[in-house]
Image 1 (spheres, rainbow, N blue to C red):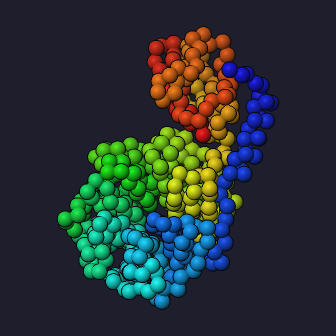
Image 2 (image 1 turned 45 degrees about the horizontal axis):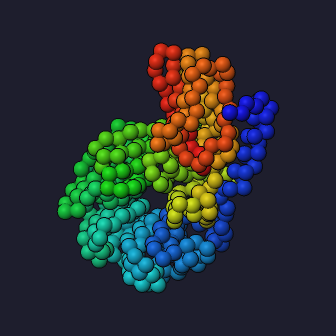
Image 3 (image 1 turned 90 degrees about the vertical axis):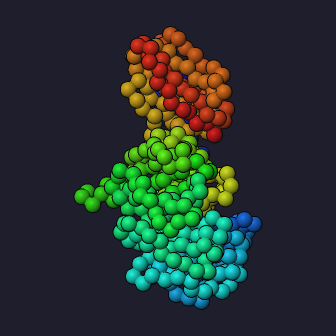
Length: 406
């Protein structure tokens, strides 16, 4: 254990910020100022971006270089989805769905719904579902050759859809969560009790679903409501995390329930850990709204946003530069969290704490102090991993949080 004074800690924070600022997101110039809404990557390094004014960009080398596609039609696009390297779809204004069978060389109109928008789509085998404005949901059972409108008993808009646990799941306005099986075109309402708009849903496997949402407070300028929902039992039960972020969350990408990335208005990218209880802002150097985020592997990722914004990271954006990322309860504070391997972290304890223990995820005891002389402890030298920090109170109660070291 190493103890340092307050001045020493401030120096460490400044050095940490310098390291983090060099590990954030960089801009890629696409030569457009049109708003970009959706990113989609297939295998073999092929990827697409779709946006305002029939904007489509394509990469064949995992985002190293991008070329602009001239699709031969005119439509304000909101979504793009490729089933494989050849077969893909665009979704947008007037409910238009265009399909290509030759890697975006030519496109054919397959569906339209005048006066509405389609925003997002998902597929399973030959089944495809597209969701959009005022309850519009279109589906196909033959890889997008023929489309029908599904039966949905709501006029709430849907913004995102996935396939998981044998069902399609759609989310949207005022906590809207609807699902349907592959066999039926009728959607079941299982909405969550919130007025917040749900903007994104992601499936990690057949049982884990994560929903993120955000919206402006219409009664207070500059205030936003944000929410993250986790289900680890195929949508039967939901655990809520409320993100205290003064910007609107538009979309998200999660590697697992304990590590995700939230993006939103005014250049927002947040690294979110421990089911949304620990959050750190990342440096983007932009005030443009970010609309989508995708990771190709464990480190390389892209964000698309307004004004032709495209951001790239090679190391998951580093860590949150906001050193005020603090776990706080009535008994102790743990900060900063997460940290880089070898960096320091501090635990400040209340007088109700009798002892402190730190264990790794295998239960091995890393630190134990049964006689608390100091109420502020500084630790260093921890290897990469996840650690449980437990304060044992005089009353016998135990309060535990997780420390993330990368």
